[in-house]
Image 1 (cartoon, helix red, strand yellow):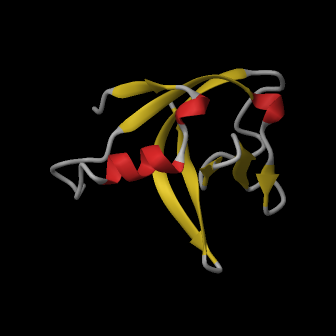
Image 2 (cartoon, helix red, strand yellow):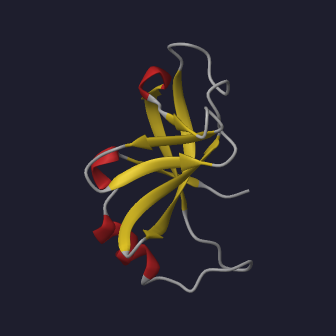
Length: 104
């Protein structure tokens, strides 16, 4: 089981993604770090594909994204903590930071 390091939304930046990547390469034996993003109000979450996937902007540089969390994953007004990992997202030549999220 991996230890989750506390993470603040203000630290979700491309600079920190690049810093983390400098400690790689990551793989089965040497896994990329996972972080604990806490005290997130579920009413602020947004979803795509008809509610199938969590996709919520966190700040100017990052979004919270999950293939497994959907609009029925949380109770109304629930305050949640999520296990997140940094991931580079590239689409049509534009790079952005995704924080890939799972329930703790």
